[in-house]
Image (cartoon, rainbow, N blue to C red; front, side, top):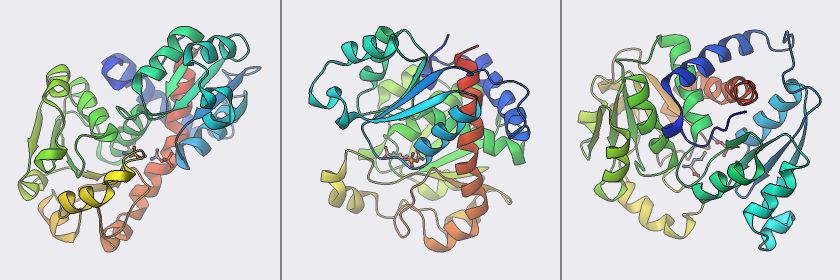
Length: 298
Ligand code: CP
Ligand code: NVA
């Protein structure tokens, strides 16, 4: 039994195992030789909105043989203040695994500790591990091993998505450049914890030059809506557009974890020019998360 709570805690061997298994899982869709979750019941407990994560986990859990229930955190007693550790101890006696999207990383960790069932972080304010595992899988499908490559993240460099990229970089041996205004660069403490080759800069063009992958995420993450006007002002210009793509390596990929806000972190033309990659990336959430589910029960 294993949890996926953070990429910081995932060993390089487990990274490789999940990424390797996802290839077979994708190929075998509709004809899986075994259903490792047969007879189980899983719950999705979400405190934030979701399209991709919710639908891919609900579909993936069913395809692996289990039943699944979606619990909006506000509809259960958790939303009225029942402690996480009590919710976890109740569910741990009834169901076989949980997928949680919430604010505090500590809440996912507490759920895992008290429920004693496999627990998967489906996004917290600190990390989005399932997304970055999928992004790396998607990159490797067309561009081979990510080790030794250059990944440039553009935008809010301090939110969950770049933080998970930071923890992946040291484990898998690629260079990560974060192009962000000073106020939106990752904390020195996270960089120190992660190690690896991470360049943080305000120089967007320098960061994009020679990159194998240009990547962006929303400027206003869930929970930060009150800061929207300020963020849009300060992050203005940290956008993936045709001019920036020209600086990257020929054949470089452009990715977006979605949802995308055209005219902000990416312009409409560049988004459409790279839509095939971006929607393959979205589809791959299903395959990679099935590999993650298999790994948690192995
Ligand atoms: N990228 C991602 O996690 O999308 P959702 O918020 O729609 O789940
Ligand atoms: N950083 C974004 C990711 C959305 C998938 C957020 O937290 O809203």
